[in-house]
Length: 184
Image (cartoon, rainbow, N blue to C red; front, top):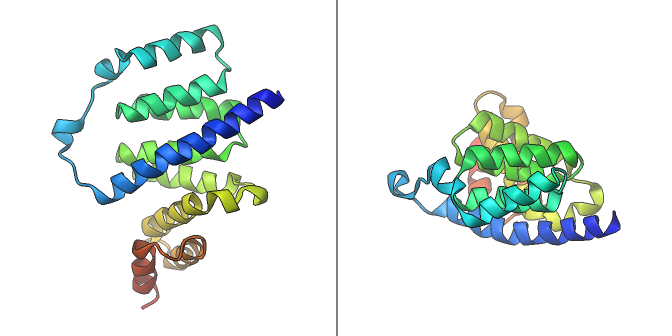
């Protein structure tokens, strides 16, 4: 069990690094979705994905392989399978916050804002106090996303969330702008 935890932590660090680049790109780059969409059938033919699927068939509770598969689906922009795979990980490791953050990212990429918001909220609730420091950037973004989603329906809650976002990352100019908007 200890070996699994070490591997999961290493995988988490790797996903954070990969995910951070993806999030920065997703937040700053406009793309032509017609040129970048990969169908599920195309993603399914990916040899990495096929290999991981076989590995998981042999051991359905291999969370490390599941996380790699979810990341491979995300790399292929196969958001439906990425979400489903992250959900499997969350069921196996309900206290592992990164799975909820990754679900939220996949939902957001799939343009499912309601489920993205719910997943970011679950991520926020699942981060353990001893993990806050290493998760500040992701927490900041999660709080920002929730604040942005709630700004019309619950401005008071949105203000609370944006204050937390800025607390975790005072350099996020989008959060600073939203805070000014909410507090004006």
